[in-house]
Image (tube, rainbow, N blue to C red; front, side, top):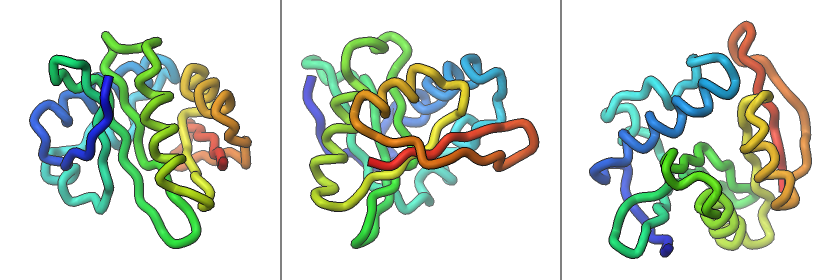
Length: 145
């Protein structure tokens, strides 16, 4: 597996995003996750920096996107192809962002009931900082490294 910078208009990225967030929607029992419903235009319009994780044959296995300031890096989304779960793809992507963040803190949010994502962030040393309900009934937890 190798990691490389990609753009939001990379072929297959939107399909990967939808497949990954469908899995999260099933886990948390709620399909109101904004990236699940994003159009290609909305995806490209977001001011995000992207990395992709690729199999040796060039297959896109996962992607991560973030926004950053001088003080912190905000992991906006992490997605792994359903067929690539449990292969270290998400871990490798988050670790690469943490390396690029340097001394800055990294923040991330995920569905409160998304145990696989929460476990990943906690194993990477993230600390739970709170939770919120951005829309009625949709609970999100917040982490910081």
